Length: 237
Length: 382
Image (cartoon, rainbow over all chains, first blue to last red; front, side, top):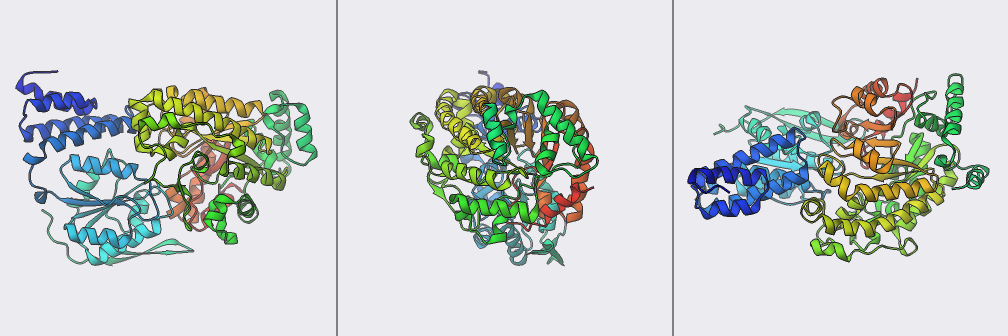
């Protein structure tokens, strides 16, 4: 463990990278500056994500690092910018599916990168998603499905959201999806894994005017998509 | 495994325990089938056995893995399919008769074993049976020590699955090849603990997890052998967590590897062929093959040590029969033409010299139309 002030931040970075809860606790005993601490923790998670993306680390190891990151965030929460200043992401697993490992990882990563994450859990109905987005004033709705069975409900959720809240961006992910599928369902973006989710989300939020889609499930063509011009979107901050 | 068993099965018109036939003789039979296949149409069983011995059959065998999806042909409910062997047998029979398949895997869902260990289950009307994740049997790390082997005779779901194997072995006879299925010990534990918690426990409390693996494996050995006795010439072991999106390779090797090896040996002792199913990302073909001595690998993604399908074929094509790997999203969202194009691309790269069975990377999605399965069937026709 480092003892000098400057090295507290190295320790925090290292604590996340090595999933070392003890090192994290010790570093926080030295009362680090919250902003610098957040920066250090984020650097640690960036390094872990890179390792995961390069197949030098597994999801199990990544989960432990995310736990340390979240513990660090809790420590500095009081001194972070108010939640109201951060973009709000409503996230959940679509109705008909209860596999929430991927969703939990993505929620943890987004929280770590400064988003206020409202996690609705698993097996969430379409209207429940959209009402939560409205209530929370969220700018992004993130939907997860690991199975193919809930895809009809995912399409329905996107459809309702796009009709009621056309300015809200929808990001989807999960084993039953890919980029093309996400697009055909009318989503604004697709996150292949937790490694790339911060970038995917940033791209989605920075994207210009999008098109809304009405998605139908029918027997012959499976997903029939009718594109309609979206209402004018508010300027992105 | 005795020669007597092989003859008894053949006399009954059922597939013999192929692994019990000496390998040189298997090769002769496969070569004869391959030669015959140049002039006439092979049976599904011949086709698969030729492919498994790395001989080119008359065409690439196909296994669309239309399992629960075939419920809708007959209007069988999900709970009936999950819980009643006769209903499930009707469904699998319909999948062969209506869609077609050279090879079927009698997988119902991934909770069969966990349910018999006492995990509370949910049987939705319109989706796959699953554990009640709000009430996991293993609530904390100390819960692993409470797991005790379940004698097969006292099981419920496992017994039904074995009955399904028996019914299907009689029905498919020497036509389509049918295989059994066992979820690996870590898979079973994840159904009773939750995957996220299990992953962390594997890293933080490996010995506690291994103690439970030992108890679960005792049951799985019995379960796998009962499927062989029921007439399955092959049984697949699902070692899902031997992949990048689960455990580190070394951790998997230490925790589940030896137990998966025991199950594989138990299948071989009964003359069964050992298959491995792993639909995780970047699966570890190398350590799974080493631990289980498997000769068949069903997969959804390229292994961690191969960058292209061609590299995979070069590296593993001699030792493994590759089963895969049509992507699930393509089956769900693709057009029949897109699916056929992808199938033919895979056949071009992986089909040379046998050792390849075209299949989805995982079970055919249960709630989508069957036209993607028909596209797979059409793709293998010459």
